[in-house]
Length: 71
Image 1 (cartoon, rainbow, N blue to C red):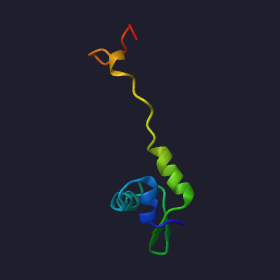
Image 2 (image 1 turned 90 degrees about the vertical axis):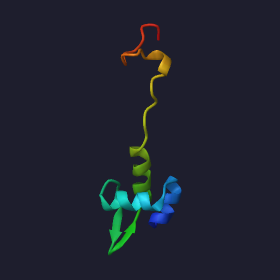
Image 3 (image 1 turned 135 degrees about the vertical axis):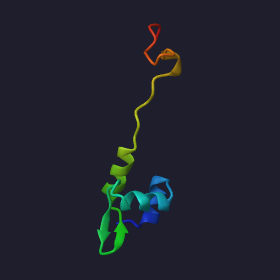
Image 4 (image 1 turned 45 degrees about the horizontal axis):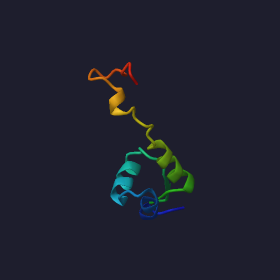
């Protein structure tokens, strides 16, 4: 189990950001009594959830937001 500071270091985010998200139940976390902790799986889930798929190159999109016929 990791403290918010340790988990934040692993995720490369601020501990305050991680604590706010945990308090809002927006990220997986554990409470051991009143102590906030993160399991390794919680940290992996947070990282996987924040993954974003690549965007289409700007040259392949027309000014109307539709894919270009040339792309």
